[in-house]
Image (cartoon, rainbow, N blue to C red; front, side):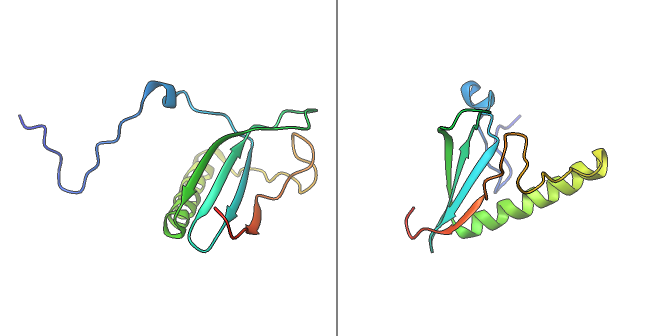
Length: 108
């Protein structure tokens, strides 16, 4: 039996420490002309400071692919579990909702 993968298939490895995941309840998105930067943050109630837990840098093309993949997965989730309720603009579970897109920064 051969261990060869079909052409174009990627062997993705998931290390144990990464598989545990990192909880985030806020994403701060900025972009330049060449990349999108997504900072994942964990905000705790009553704590005025929060650290970035993970930063992902994407090309514009990959950012759009991510958007489409999220839209597809949200549609599938809602088909099975019902609509995801929207958090009201200024009354989120941790207090005021911070906009997730601060627009172009010119830096990455």
